[in-house]
Amino acid sequence: MIVMKQKFTNRELFWLWIAKNRMQSSQYDSIRGGQRFNEKKHDKRHRIFMPMVAAVIVLLFGVGGILFWSLSKQSAVVPVVQEIERAVGVPVLTLANGKMISLVDDIKHPIRESDADVFVGDSSSLMYVVDKKQKTVGEEVYNTLYIPKGGEYSLVLADGTRVWLNSETTLRYPVNFIGMQRVVQLEGEAYFEVSPDSLRPFYIQMNGNSIKVLGTSFNVSNYTTDGSWNTTLAEGKVEVCSRGKLYTLTPGDHFTADITTGEARIVRVNPLQYSSWKEGKVIFQDERLEDIIRKLARWYDFEVFYIHSELKDWHFGGTINKYNPFDVVLRYLERTANIRFDIQGKTVMVSRID
Image 1 (cartoon, rainbow, N blue to C red):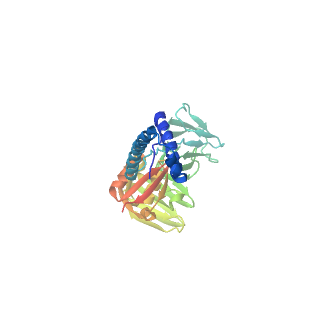
Image 2 (tube, one colour):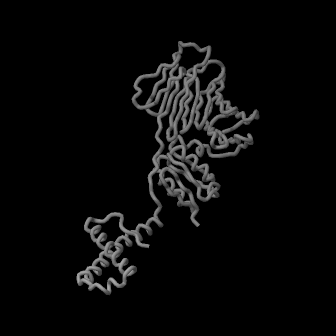
Image 3 (cartoon, rainbow, N blue to C red):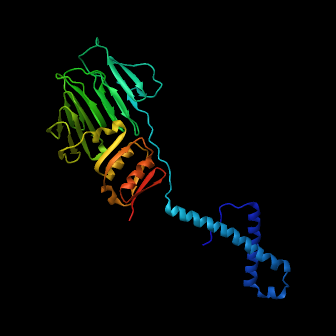
């Protein structure tokens, strides 16, 4: 197969045009009229010109052929390298009246909401400060904070509870806690340091499940796309209610329940494995590749396609800095097993190296 160069100079194009016409003429003569060569006397210049044209063609095609061979050989060894960026989105705060506020750097003044002032510390934190003179009974007013893909945020609630929110997470909470219970709703992942209050337990509600605490630190992951939800206790004591059953956790306990069947179990773990995300790391231990990729997809902007589906169930262990460039993360995984990641646009193709 002959492959020509993509671009030629004007001079080269001229010689190719001449050669093409000469070759067509020669082919026409040899096919249709052998008599023509016999009847006409060959021009000496014609006999000299044809070898020159042939040389030019060989030279040009030769160069093009070498170039093609080199590129083909290179593309067979080196995958297409494209850069996948960290997803960038702006957190959105929805006030009780439905007004939506994009939490960007240029918010300089507190946001007045019901009986509290909301302070935007920077582009990644909120603080609710309640006027002590305001009402402590009546109907609670709720705000909702949404963190998009690639984002992370922290806030201090009106009771002093600190919450760290991971990407693709929504938290609904009262501007001020009124009554004998403190209740918030979570979808996604968050780490809580609950302010102690023995008279008012703190509840996290999630799709019919709940966690009851008095004052403790723990991580909760409740992504509907994961197929299960879990909580890991770092300090204190919590009571989990799942499908009507109660489970009491102590520090180091990791509770997980299947969203569909409700099947639950408790295992002992290092709590840092499940809360390291708020420190910029992803720690995984004997974890399925599909689960690892799903976590990374909440931080980086990509989709995944498994050429060999059995790779989803391969297990890995290690620590990843989630602020690293995405290709660095993939190369790290490649070094630990016979696996290959190729990037095409925003799609990561996963294949096995035999």
